[in-house]
Amino acid sequence: MRHDHLITSKQLSRANIETILDYAAELDADPSAVSDRHAGTVLGLLFFEPSTRTKMSFETAMKRLGGDVVDMGSVESSSVTKGETLADTVRVIEGYADALVLRHPKQGSATMASEFVDVPLVNAGDGAGHHPTQTMLDLYTIRENAGLDDLTIGIMGDLKYGRTVHSLAYALTNFDTRQHFISPESLQLPREVVYDLHQQQDGTGIREHESLEDVLPSLDVLYVTRIQRERFPDENEYQKVAGEYQIDAATLEAASDDLTVMHPLPRVDEIAPEIDETDHAAYFEQAHNGVPVRMALLDLLLSDDGDAGLTGGDGDE
Ligand code: ASP
Image: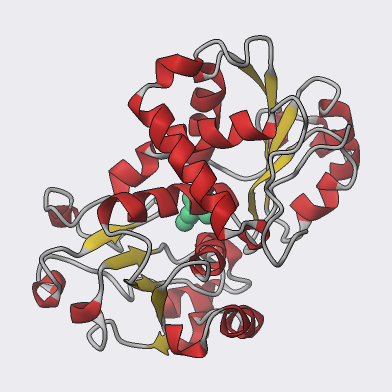
């Protein structure tokens, strides 16, 4: 039986998102209710790029559902170094696991890999493409801290290569949000993403800026991102923008007292540690939310009928 795959946030409707977030909230309140739900189930982890939070929270989520994981390990220690193709690797590991989680440096790799397997495949980041489970935990954190409707959010930093940004921006068009994108000109959102966002949401909800000052006082949430050094074709280009768009306590003096500051992590120097102890900081809570959200998603994807209903959005892939 062919199961649902989760490849981009474009495939998620508002109803899908609300189902997952509501269920995650239930599991967050009482994780023990499902501690045997997936006994005997095995999740395959295929990470071709470094990961701490995503990989460990998927592993924790599967174990809290009563299941277990098999991990391909590092690329260096796998048959990838012998020249094995991604299509062959996923076809082999689907024989060992009931669902697969894939992270890969190449954009589009998750879509391609999903065409070769019948078990559910979750995209845990494909290059500068998408990262839909990060989006789900981002939405969960936004809902808890600021609410998802009548929301004004600033998304700042590397909007060109930041896959968490691309996924989040699409998902937010399902809600009544004003999205302000703040970056240097060289790291603006890809034009096709801007075009899509305008198509999906009344254009008044999408604005681009070079300066945070312009919008900071109006924001409910500021989502800060790391400059994605590993994606720059030229180190000199990275050096030109490294260190731009950092925030510290002085920056936030112009912000509302209720501003929620988020970051998908890891941070390098984008958020000064002095912000960690303030009521603005939600980034560690955000990382912790990865467990209940991924538990909810895995439980839905592993449901017996194979239909998690994750295909309600416009961009079903
Ligand atoms: N952890 C996030 C990702 O994998 C963000 C980052 O790496 O900056 O995309």
